[in-house]
Image (cartoon, rainbow, N blue to C red; front, side, top):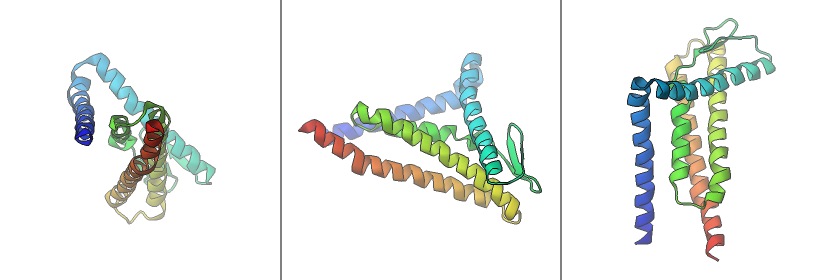
Length: 179
């Protein structure tokens, strides 16, 4: 019976985070000026991280790159446009919500949640870089096919992190707490 209670609390927390996201992204950010500025700032920061980090790393790998606020390209290609959804805010938020909601000691959440969010951000930087390289080397491939492939790769990363969290990290720590 205790397990069902923990599952129900977990589901309530997840739905609470999801409801907060829906209200924030769909309503509050469009109707309350200060909320819009704060909400948009999170998108802005993640967009800058993805764009500038990709630019830096592509140049480090020897590509001649041009970029502006929303796009990045290797000279000689069309490059990619980084939209709000591509900035990764929704996925970072979902990753955060998933791990914070799971019943586990706060001590392990303090290191695993930021690590997971950081890995998702790194994966998004890699996604933008690889899409930019693909647009340069294989312009005949449709952008949407590449985009979906790399999105699914990041979803798999979140699933793997979740699996590691549930199967290896939390049970070990809970056993230590019980003894």
